[in-house]
Length: 268
Image (cartoon, rainbow, N blue to C red; front, side, top):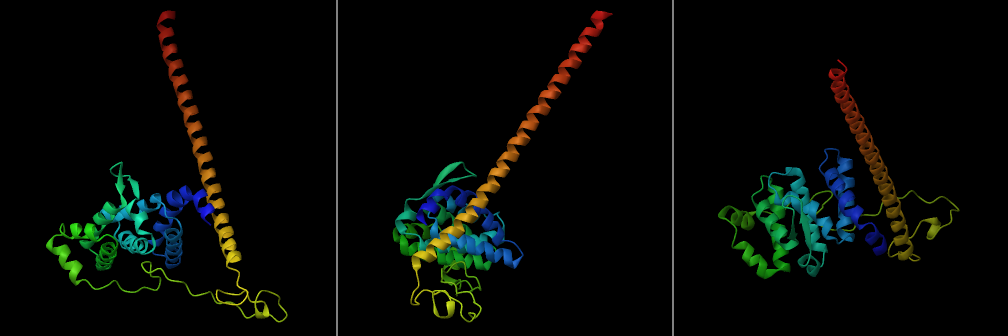
């Protein structure tokens, strides 16, 4: 799994993550749920600085989409609950708006300040959770951060209730219930009784085989993403070539017109 993650880290962080985040803000519940599962899996398995930029940049900008800010605040909670503190402390990323590198801890602090003043109560409640997690990881920095809060932010920090539980809780990493399986047919072979594949804790469960299957599925999806990217790059190159040809043809025609105009007085 680590080899696959390293190999496709750029595509996962720069292509898959932004698109999955956009999906979570869709009105369509199925798309939003699928995007949520994808983002959560990326946070848990890809500890890359590039992965953080699309999560924290909407939180640092109070003008960004409110629904996206609420979702990103939940994902930042997940990051703080699952990433090692030393990884958080030494991570930085390139911020598009300022064209500068930003330490992740500085981005978290700016996100907390911004979200504590957000118009949505759920986002403000998530900011409180983020601060409490940050305080547990970096007590000295959190004390300095608290000293910068205004009265309104301090009141929200002290009085806000915890965010409401959701059917697909982005903020609390939890094991999903196993999917319902049809009853085994009579005489069907397999790993468990009656041919049902064993689950974690069952006798005969092969964790490595399960991981290999997940890696194979992820690799297939990534290959399709790479194929799509290659197609788009070829299309972009073709359009660029077409643009160059059109510009050259226009240039030749303008040149011919100028030469024709200069030759007409000479002939007269």
